[in-house]
Image 1 (cartoon, rainbow, N blue to C red):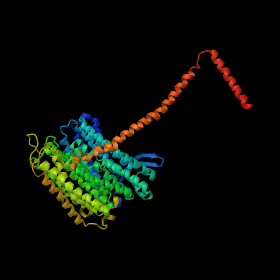
Image 2: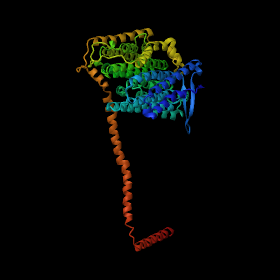
Image 3: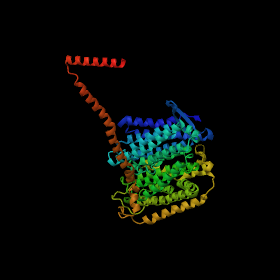
Image 4: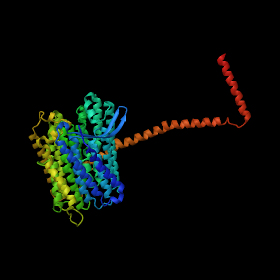
Length: 630
């Protein structure tokens, strides 16, 4: 590997700017947003320079590193605070900083009336710095620091308007769910060190085939738990919908394009673990399959436009997680869908923010209707993202999702059929609920309860949406052309060794099946919602719709399975602590006190008493000596 002095600047610039904005206080209110945006754009520029420099080198020399300092040197554990930029991490660097910069520009206008806008931008840059550290760290321990920083930034941004109790509660819920996943990552690191004596990616990859299947499975399952927490996958997905309490740019950056994809990065980066741990890999498939359907069903019943998009994110991340369980070629297609999703989902979230801006912060789609003719640019760009996410060719989602469905079917046997049908069913439901979102928002009768007509958003909000929409159109074609992304990721995940394996279904058949699935979902949605809609959701609904409105009882499930038993366990442990630990301490104290009281009676203050005690003691001593020596 070659070295580069630019990697540290990628992280240092947004991190220092965040500190400046926090420490400057209200003095930065007039210029803080400008500084934060310039810094984010600077990190993106450095990322572009590194990408072209990497592109100009051979595969063997493309990865670059930078050692900052020796972090830990204890016994056999030696960890450097080092950064590594390779073909996988550069994809995330460009996504984080590129999309992040556009969201900064959008936020300048969106947050213009907030008196704490400077603090918001400080949190945004702290998030970008943490996310960059997560994807640039060359070891699990370095990744863990960024992982925790991202969790903190998410908590701060979700609860940015913490004067509202519901928003503060949502931030705490996200933080706790992520902490459960973080426990999994910390345990995985501990097992890895115990097994390999190393926590670096390169060191573990080199010796992965020397570990037992039990050790690798344990590491893989703990890494999967970490991914479930960060990427809102079953059973730790309940926080994502509530996280929409944060400002809309937060939803676009953290909960659509970057943070929730960290789990996909973790599994892909750990491909050398999962490829040698079939049980852990199977669990990845199960979790991804359940979540993609889980999120899609929830999305069908949500009237809050941001929560509908959040459910969509949960489902699409499920596609990515499932793809990472399909072996080397699956990793490549997961990253492809991650990148295309970053464009079209960010554009739709920002489009939702534009709609909210025109609708006086209303989020209920049943109180929208007919907005398309008043906000044509927002409707057009949102529509492009919609066509991309449901997988209509030639939009970007078609190329990436279609490849995941194809790879799922080609997994072989009953497993391949089950996975393929699950991904197809997900495509049907996605087309249905996304068509529902578009119709309820931009078409039909006008249902808003105020006289003012919605107006198009300012240019600073529309320009980023427009640029992201270009990615919604072209990103999939660019990444798939000539197996471009598959070839690019070859040194990291080696997808080519399975790329031309025997096919269960030809690609053209899979594409036709996917298009039929999309048309079914789209047609059903049009037939159901084409007429005039009412501003109130119907009360008499099916059991499935009722369950979907309540997020398929995920909160009730977590409360019954985790929270209540956890509270009972804590009460039991507290009682044991009081009876055993505290009881032992209290017994020692009581015994000491009692002995002191008894000994105190010997202290009379009379000389004759002390003389008598001395005589008795001397006689006892002499008697003992006589008995021993007799």
